[in-house]
Image 1 (cartoon, rainbow, N blue to C red):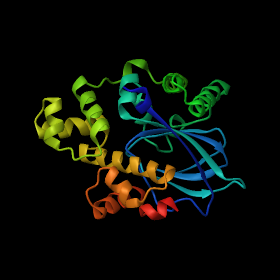
Image 2: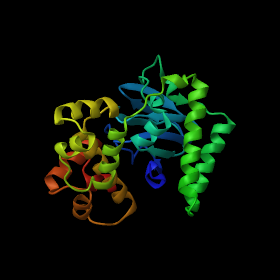
Image 3: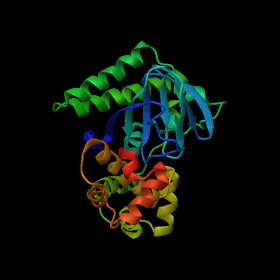
Length: 265
């Protein structure tokens, strides 16, 4: 997978007055490093307390919401957003598929040692450099970080699943074309399957169906444009693959529980 696409970095800061009051979800998997502050975070209907240096592993199915920031300082996140093919290629998807429940939260909320923190700091440093080698180093450090976590929690290497080449080709095609209309038959043809068989196989491999995956991919792209540019909401909607504003607002609200303008403000 292209190193530039494999891992995206986001830095976010929240206080009680600017955090979202509604649950949200994403198309990608996330490694969230709590750099500062502490909060009560509801993930998959369970409430967890997270604090400085905690690492939280989030998948693309579970809704989450910051209920309350409990520290005097703002809550600061450093997030590695992982595209699904990266996890297939590395064989580390099971890290994110453990149920996020009280009985298993130790496997999804990690209290890192100095070695893991050093890897996160290296990723942060390389992302700020952004020279020609940075994407490769970020991917290498990200893979090492996940492998070290897998070893620490006792995830057996033989449990790692593989993804067939046809499904990887489908995901690559979506990455290249999600800003235009993509039909189910188009994707099924790439996988050499019927539309019905492909839809079932895609959902089994990715946790969500193809239409939902594409929608979340578009909204994730729109969120990045809202955060990083001053372009109009209409321009962002069109460039994210939506043909009209009604569909964009509906899709955006279904995932973030906010309107695009409210999210930006």
